[in-house]
Amino acid sequence: MLVLTITAFLLALILLRVPIAFAILISSIVGLLALDGPPAVVGILMTIPQSAVSNSSLAAIPLFILMAQLLLQSGALSSLFDSAKVLVGRMRGGTAHAAVGAGAVFAAVSGSSTAAAATLAHTSTGELIRQGYDKRLSAGVVAAAGTLAAMIPPSVLLIFYAITAETGVGPTLIAGLIPGLLVAVALVITITILITFNSSSAPRGEASNWHEKFRSLVGLMPVVAIFILVVGLVFLGVTTAIEAAAVGCLGGLGLMLGEKKLTWANLTKSFAEALRSSIMILTIIMTAHVFGHFITKSQVTPYLVESLSAMPIAPILIVAIIAVGYLILGFFMDQMAIIALTVPVTLPVVTELGFDPIWFGIVVILLAEIGLITPPLGLNVFVVAQASRMPVQDVFRGSVPFVLAILAVGVLLFAFPQIVLILPEMMGSL
Image (cartoon, rainbow, N blue to C red; front, side, top):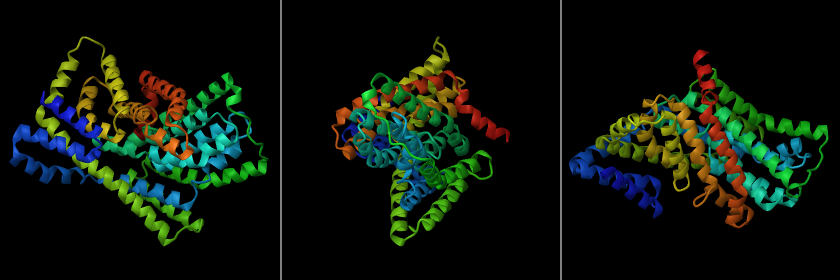
C-alpha cells in the first residue's frame, strides 16, 4: 500500500511539472521516512547518490553526448537531409524517404530522440511541404524519424538502461542496431503504403545526375565512418564503450578541424551542451537509485516476483502485460524516468520468468519511445509543430500511421527475440 501511495504521489509531482529528478527524490524521501525515519534517510542520502554515479560505465554518457555536439558544431550533420535527398529524391516520395535516412544517420551519432527531431524539423519539414508533400505526412515522418535515436547506437537511453539493469553497456548498445534499422525500414514501408493509396500526398522529387549523387555520398562518408568506427570497435571487442566514445570525440574534433570549425566558441558550446545534458542524466540516476533503495526496503519486488511466477498463465503473456504497461507509461512520462523508476521492479520479474534482460530493454525502449509521437505529451510532435508552425493536432494525426509501424516492429521483436540477441551473442563468440 505504501509503494502505491508513493508512486501516486510521484506521478502527481510529475503532472505538476516538478522536474523529474526532484520529483523522484522528494517521493523517495517521503517513502523512506515512512519506513525508517529521519536518521536512516540522512544516511541513505549521504551514501546512495555518490555510489550511484561512481560506476565507471557512466563515463560513456557524457562522452557520447560530447561526440554528438562536436559533430553538430562541425556542420557535418546539417547536410544529411540534402545528401540523402539527392541520393533517393527522384522517386515518388523520395524526399520523405530521405528524411528517414537522414534521421537514421543522425540517430547514429546524436543519441537523443528530441535533438534528432529538432534538427530534422528545421532541415526537412519545410522542404517537404515546399515540394508539395501533404503537411500531415511531412510532419509525421519527421517526428517518427526522430525516435530512431533511442535505438540506433550509440543511444544514451540504451546506455542508461544498461547501467540501470546492470547489463553490459557494449552488448546492450549493439543489440539496438538491428531493431533500429527495422524501425527505419518500417517507416519507409509506411510512407510507400500511404503514397500508394494517395499519390497526391507525395510528388516526384528532382532528378540528380551521377556526379551529384557521388558528391552527396562523399559528403555523408565522414559521419558514417565515425559511426562504423565507434560501433565496430565495441562490436569487435577492441575497446569498451567508454573508449569507443572517446575515439568518437576525437573523430568529431578531427571533423571540426577539417571543416575549419574548430574555434573556441564552437568548443565552448559543445562542452557546455554536453555538460548540461550529462548533469541532467546523472541527477536522474542519483535520485533513481534512492528510489530504488526505497523499493528494495519495501520488499515489493520479491512479492511481485513470487506472485506473478505463481500465476497460472504463460510467462510470455505476463511479459506482454508488462510491455503494454510500458506503452501506456510512455504516453505520460519521460522515457528516462520510466526506465529509472520501473526497471528495478519489473526486470527481476522478467528474468525470473526466463527472459533475457537485454531483449527486455530493447522492447521496453521501443515501446516507451512511441510516447514521443503520441498524445498527450508527444515531445517530438511539439518540437516538429513549433519548427514547422503547424497545429499540434495535425502533427499528431500525421504520426498515427508511423505509430502503428513502430508497434509492428515491437510485435516482431516480441515474437522473434533472436532479432535482438543475435549481435550480442556474436560479440560473445568473437
